[in-house]
Image (cartoon, rainbow, N blue to C red; front, side, top):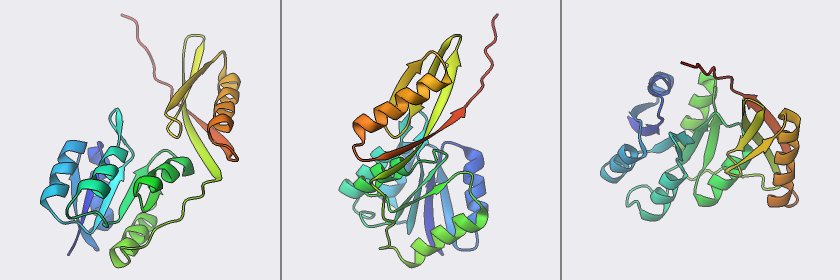
Length: 196
């Protein structure tokens, strides 16, 4: 049976991917970049699936390791699995060796189709769209201060309200990504703070 390595810091996500792919591949799940690197050095996989955000790191450092230093996986398909609905993240990743991406939450059929396609066509690669970036920004506020983080730019902006944050982020995109069309969507995470 084909072998897939799935890196995700969510144990629940690993279980879902194992169930999803059980008919086409044996999935080995790991929670840390170090564990993934160790298994990549010791074993041969047919497809590598990496969650984008692993704790405070991204899996891009592991992608770079695989493409530059791995003895067994320099041409193995690497698929990014991410909740950041951003073509920009994939575009950056494609420059260092990603083959494709799947957005979370995903439908079982979509995950199965993408992974099966790479199991059968390992040299395939999705073409990134360098002039169109759809950015998903994480937004939060603390008191009267509002913040927005972009995984595409690896930057945080601060504003006096949600609208000013969005405008600042669009401005940063236009400065950094010349000739790019920025579509910013905000995901507002509400986390209660408790005072003791």
